[in-house]
Length: 220
Image 1 (cartoon, rainbow, N blue to C red):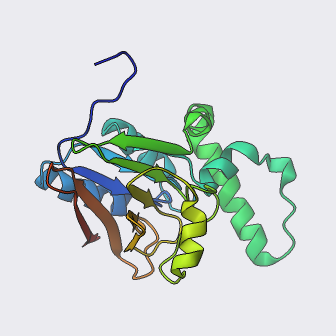
Image 2 (image 1 turned 30 degrees about the horizontal axis):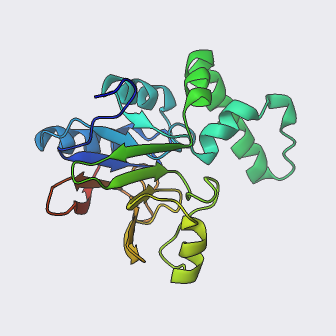
């Protein structure tokens, strides 16, 4: 294998997204993955901002060696300085306070970690196909691919990306769609699923006779 070339995946992989600092939800998913003996974990961004324990989430993702990409809230934590915040309404003040508390709590080490995260990850599979993981979409990591979009809208966000499977998050709603030979897999949300008390995850198993994709959830 040439230096720097990725070894094709040949075992089940777990894909998560949008943990949003919700440690109980993350722990529930990790416990289920451990029960299934799945140790290869990928996370499609929005890791720390929003929940009560961003530090705990950061530590757990590090402990399980999760391979992550940067989401919108991750970028915000890195790029928005406290002096840039100018809240006006009561709700804006509350969000600004939560933002500042998260930024203070996680510290410079975690901020540097978020800053260095890539916006996409590519994963070759044993059958020669490829997964691309991105928070939003291949065309624009900041634009989400949601279940209520038309095929034409989704095609525009796929653009000309060569991957066979696109794994994304951002919308918090899990879904799959086949589109011109490309499988779009939105893995939903660990920490802010619209159902409440549910944490989504997706298991992708590479095989020579075709990739298996299972979308599931656990309660917490």
